[in-house]
Image 1 (cartoon, rainbow, N blue to C red):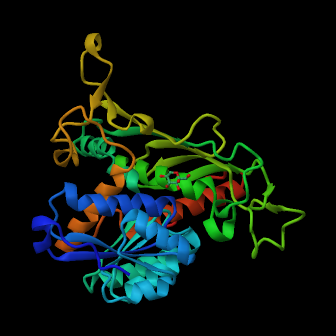
Image 2 (tube, rainbow, N blue to C red):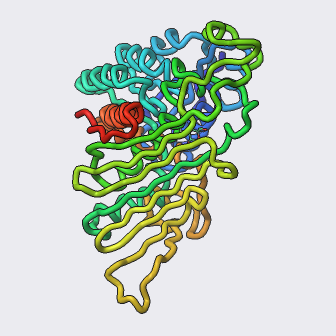
Length: 402
Ligand code: SOE
């Protein structure tokens, strides 16, 4: 295998932060882009190095290493986490392996970045959080990858709420709509099996909007009332499907064991009310995350399909000239933007992973807990568990366990 990426230019003087990634599908590609780019755009206290990527299929992970710029390829994550030339383990696998990989990496003295949701159960998330707290005392840091906090427009919205521009919060309204499951012939992939994914739209999309709503509001949910539904309960087995499905598979099909859609309302600790919708059946919506916050003095609205923009209504303006105005979030004093292009030159989805890497690198260099921490990820897991509990009781209001 090749050597870790050699320093180019003055970067070579900075200490390396050697990253080992587990997983190389969509999130593996997105995180690779983040690690490859971050040191070339931001002035960092150390130099991220793409040291090794890991996957079970030797040929596929070797191809991924070449494509995404990783110096080495591994086929056993247990070997990767023990390598003494790895400082940080980045977990980009399905949720059923997050806990075992994170616990092993923390025990091996590594920093950890773990994709969302943190785990498939509250119990796993609790164990990961306890291990991360113990590792923090040893100087190790752990972050969960809620990347939509790192869109410049959402980071600006957070800044504006914290400055009090909305005043007391009354409503948060958030939807995350996709449509990739509308076709009943879409195969029974891992995201549709509870033992691998933990849940369906709830953990995949709902986790994002629960975290984003709480992050922007600056407060946590106290309780929820929920409905969930699985619209298509049997799907064709993927080509080559083997273990774990035979028990339920009839001729070529298998049971969907997760939710297809989740709708829930919530009450924040301040009394503000929230509504959430996460679905993979919103025909025509591809990756449509929209959030709006209404306060006594104003409102903010964000649409992921127009992610360089933030809509702001200043409720203190005289009615004659009042209205929602569009803030083009590309100014150098907007979050993250001073490192990118001149005003008006927008960013994209992939840049949220560059910003995520930037913030984690700075947290590591400064020895402080990154946000969102594993404890933040655990709290989101508790909200998801309350949603499932409420849905099982026909929307009975269910407090969030503390
Ligand atoms: C689901 O399709 C998905 O890939 C999520 O898993 C990601 O977290 C989200 O950013 C895009 O959609």
